[in-house]
Image (cartoon, rainbow, N blue to C red; front, side):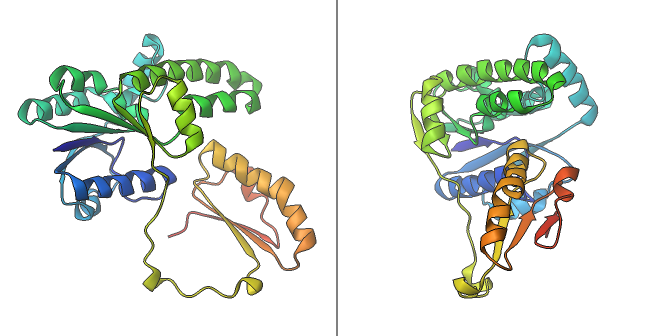
Length: 284
């Protein structure tokens, strides 16, 4: 028996994070007697997720009002901002109820956000092995954001980065296994204290029968950038592509076109739209 604790229901899988989560959970579902525990928001499609896997799904409704209280408590207690809701009172109670009724061989935490619940697992189910899947090295993302942010934001981000690093290092030391997206991330996580790190690269399943045959490469003139455009690293990459790289391509390849696909593009990126640059926003 394996328990997977997720930060949300990963359907619709319209971000890189939910794509990774959904594919990992589906793979775990094929190998284990799986139970999933996750908070649920109205925008998430629980019925579709339940059709994707054979295992059981236990959900806890997320409360916007409670989240505001939790964030205020985070600021006082020294926790990272935005993290407390992933270890809410309702989630802790649901986890304790599951562990009191059943014995799980392993518990899989998706993101360090959910791994804040790790102490409960150690107390209630000390024999269970604990795995944390790291989509990013979260502290490093924030540390890189500090120097390129507006001056008034830098002190706040620096505090957040320190708090996240403290939490991340603590959880890395306490886990039995950490999974990472790349060898670069794996090296940083080992330096943080993770004892065993395994690399699971991101991937997607494509129904090739439903995909039309592409045109010969010499006939193609479009470059497509895909990524959620409400996440800073993706936005920075897209803006750099437009500002520094695309003018070189434009000068060398006649008729080339850049298509930037992703939800919630910021206004400066939308303003880059011109004859050979398309910013789509959300697509089906």
